[in-house]
Length: 170
Image (cartoon, rainbow, N blue to C red; front, top):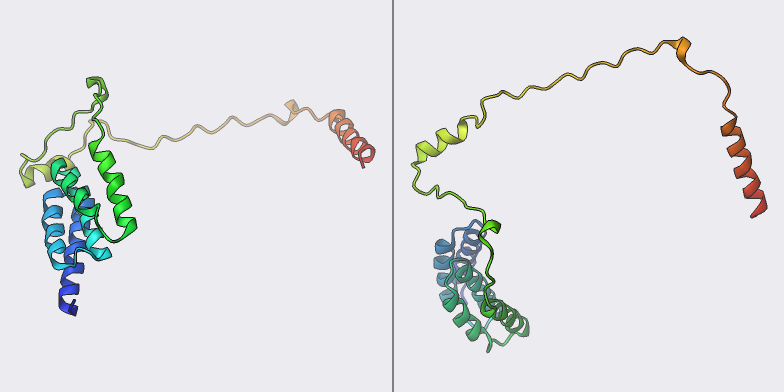
């Protein structure tokens, strides 16, 4: 593969991975499919691109496309790529579990907000109270005449007991 094509592959592949990590699944699929066309499918990089493509398809809820790529990778020369695709295929074919509605958190759709509206909403405080640091009250001073100044014999007894045990067990 020539240097320019390799550089184009690497740039496109990185853009696809970055878009997937940022949750932009359609952009990720587009970039990863471009990268897939720029590289030898039997190479390790060709397998890695398709592994990432499986993840992008899965995230975009295109499960059948992801399964199809897993089946393609079942014949890949790299044992590591074959193993990863088998593990992903197992996950993709696993039955979906039913979750109770009370376990679900509803996320509002913010895609309909205009850009200016989104900025003003983020800059407005959510509560009406201003948060202030509270000063902790200073403790009342202790009168020195109330302090017990008598010698406490417990400390001496405990110290002698520890020394005696030390000599007995050594």
